[in-house]
Image: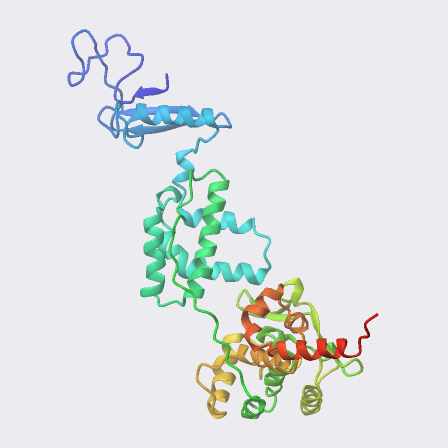
Length: 396
């Protein structure tokens, strides 16, 4: 037997008085210490470890496994036979308690983990933290996505990133046996519009560099002349610059871990790369080194206090004032310098495969999607090349 009457004794003792409320004729029931306390009917079973589990229900008979003991017990036994049984205690685990378990199983870099934890704290736990995993339904998820857009005002691309983290956590809960199915089904996300590539002219890049304090203008040249990401520019050290080979090695970046900027490996394995060193960038680095009297292995740019740059500090205190002074649009970003590098190289006929490698893209598809429209029209060059090849051909 797996269903028990909590309100009445299974083995009454001599002298016990019958229950007046529930005894019927010769069928006598004897009150237990839990008489009228909580739900009457209890299902008991043993989990995979042999530990006894139990759950109480207000009704014995019926078809709803959420309220009827017999229906729940039948479902449990059928699911167990199919190997699909999910312990309801696990389903009641609060989301905020499971998320750290999932996080510890990730193999991401510390900077990525910190980003995930930030999204959990700021956007995911406020929506689901106190809910049991099994209580999270698709309707709640869709409402949360809508609130991120309408109430919080996040950009569609950011919402997609946050939702991806949440969906991964729920897939982990499904895999670990906390859920029967994931609530992330048919969830509509805001449409992500193609990235608008803003390109700066060489004159605008030089004006931007001149608008920055002398010790930081080199960063504009690193972005536009080498195609570095902002963190890579912050982390570039002098000993990675080789005037002899006219190449720059990109093998570190600045990331924020525990709110402190530190040097770390680049974003992906493809981000480890060597980039051609244009003369105007080398000249800028030479002037920069002479200005600051840098050590041979020094990071090129630091804050006035000598610490590595944080993106938020740089953008607020150096970048924003500089783009205003240079007469550039208010929404100009450091990444626009990287776009400028790519577009300039492509416009001069550099193969897009080379540009992709210098940008550190993990796939050329990313480069084509962003910059494919900037590749010079090739049909004319193809005609000329074929004509030239066949012009001198002799019929055998």
